[in-house]
Length: 148
Image 1 (cartoon, one colour):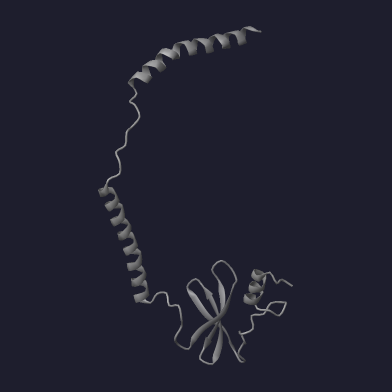
Image 2 (cartoon, rainbow, N blue to C red):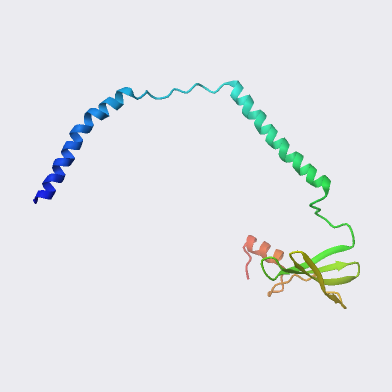
């Protein structure tokens, strides 16, 4: 062993010897384990009322949004979106049915432009994949285990 290793071991031994009284003193001044009080009926009532408030707030906001009509689920008029294609992060092309006409519309931030008015209507009823089955039929057959 060289001198450096001997000094390291002596330093470690001295630190251990000097730390024992310090640790013993710290142990005397530290408080014991915290004793928690049992949960009372008031705590449960407060939690229950808070939960009711949050649920009421959620349902109230849902009612308000539906009342304002911001999120209409079904279009009752003659305007329908038939399909769309995303061209970038914020650009889209959308096929819209207005009465008997179909319009191809370009959407970008702050701009809506009619790209083309279609002479013949595009039939959107055939959602068939390569196998001749619709996606819903194919998914149902996979779930039932009847894959081709």
